[in-house]
Length: 483
Image (tube, rainbow, N blue to C red):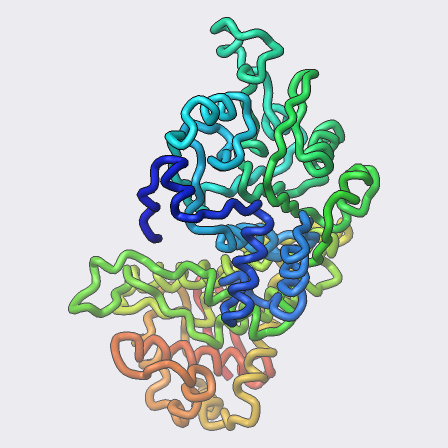
């Protein structure tokens, strides 16, 4: 973030040749600059490049207020918040203004009076774009006072009359003047609040307690909603829908690559590294979740999203996969802390932990209530099998399978370290080829080497089991593979 300009008066601001643009013109100008330079319009937004992003760009270039329609966890709020980056980094405001008035265009009686009295000496300050964003989650108890404003009893007690505009305590919308205001879950607003928002969208003015303040608010209004609620005429008044210039439908990641990129971007896998030794990550440092496990989790999330047992109206948030990766990492950290492993590396045995953790994130149809764990376990097994077929297709695993023909049993679980797991197998034929298939981009040297090798071998055993070429028995936190 650059430092704020040092200009402190209206006269000094005029001397710089500063131009006053409305917020939509400001956003349009900065968006055009980004488009021309090839920079991403909305950094960090994944999977919308050819669908949602162009529609939002057109809406902003047209100067439209817009509503994003989509099921939960499709990145609507994340996308809205990235719009802040299209505002100028710093903008001048009149010192003491409650609603961010531009020094060239005061709109409240107080600021108009000060501007007339002080002229070019009118004091100004600078507001960063991060302070020009307001957001409200719509709830049934949201009031007109919350969004628009109300009479301030303290100001009335000081002797001002109720008709004096100075008695108004401004709500969130006018306080975001010259910025971006977002309303999440718009249909949850009571109808009378929707009417108040209609007035803001239509006339750009506000009404408080029976008298009208003609305040030409300058803002971009963005809302989010579930499509089912938004299209239900009982949940939102039709005139309000008509005032939004653009409706943009969001969606879940359509390609596996987008799902994986989103998980890698959003999953928080950093632990405290102060306790690491000689600069190497420890069990308390950053855990490793091998990419083949991340792919299995991504496939699991997509399977849950498409499962007929899941209520399709509520959707399955992209956060399910993100939280699942974090849970699998935490399971590895727990094992490393118990067994003393130098690095926490997730293995297939850790995937079981995501089923109970995910249950609360998925809404099932009434007919499948009580079968949630059963359904999720089935979908997880299918995701692991699909990942195994994708990653290991054509790889000859018979030498590994033959090690079990003589009665070998291999134990894994919450308290089995990577060293101990591999010791049970002895020499492993084709390990380098297996690692190349499952973790082609990893560096097979350093403190995580053993953990990654154990993760690869255990995943291969699980693939053999799911293809009915090995037996497996699970007892509590112990898993035993055999012939």
